[in-house]
View 1 (cartoon, rainbow, N blue to C red):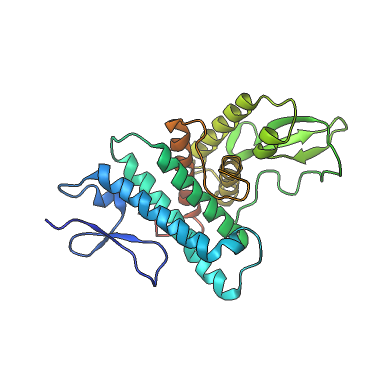
View 2: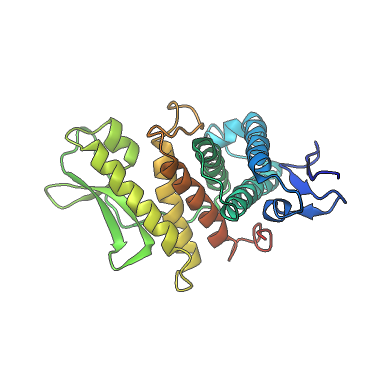
Length: 279
């Protein structure tokens, strides 16, 4: 029996799975074939995705790192980049959910890095949804800022509009904060409690964006912000895009995989580059 194979060529970004007859199949259908070996093919998908990330970083690293703006020609290619990364993350999560295989830390690291690259790509071409409280926050001044940090929900009774870390000063200013800032640059922060609160918020918003009542563009911005904020605080260095699972917990990896897949799924409701691409 001929096995399914990965189709990757120099003239395309990313890869697709092909059946033994040469038909394009999503990974979920590949692992449903007679004699399928999901315990081998899911890791193969991750390794191939990791290769794609290395290629994208080598080609567009300066743009994704904010060193320069993309050219007109690069903009078209970058649309294909983020759409491909989103599809490959979605395919992995969708296929894994159809198995009884446990999650893995490595899956969270690779999917997390892919999600970060997707977000950076969409930022570079102005295709990102707005984060929670966009346009409603005060600007921080120079010097040390005193205040109380907390995770603030846009609408406490509804999760899909999202939440964001803010510092509220004694005189009532609401200033933007990040998980990285709280973990590494702020004093008096209970880091374990902060991580726990962010985890719970990310899981809650990931579940909530599937609500048919959720406004897709606002929900996608809310989810992407919480995911981006987590990932930025879990890189293996300040200039790196490689994501670490420092807790060593498979649950943290599963959280990242679920959030990346939900991000692609909600954007497939309105983004022309994704509509119809997620089986």
